[in-house]
Image (cartoon, rainbow, N blue to C red; front, side, top):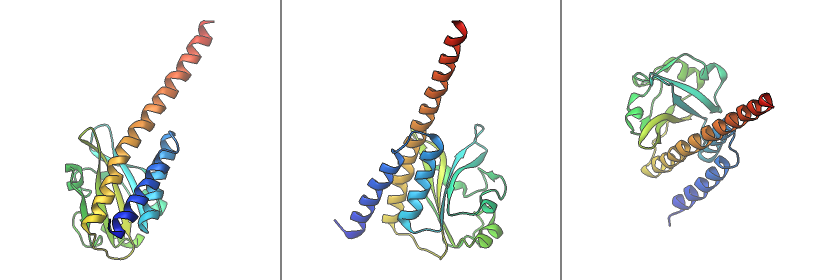
Length: 183
């Protein structure tokens, strides 16, 4: 096993452990972006999910990015690195100049040089994207993309598990409230 393979395997295990350390929705999402960012040494990371209509990406968790950048404006699903939503990882080597970046000026102001955008799948359907941001221009190797794609795939399962847990908690609270009213 090559050193990078061992490093990525070890990092993947640590990230999966962090993802599974909680079933609380926001905590799971935070662990994904924080662990991914720290493992890769990147400037920041965001996890975005498609809204119910599938027209906009909503930032549901971020790490290493300013609130101003995270809240810069609506992220149109058909304008914000669109190919990711077709199920393909996308590498943006120059975020300030690439026409696929919806907010290039804000990217420059945030100090973002490169972006990797990866689809998050759930049962073969893209439900969102995981984005990694670097402060220096980067060329990503196939091993890097494979590692990040594995994190994005695991993220889809983690999101589903956390959502199901939230539904169970809500149903339990509603059931407890209904039974106490009936008494």
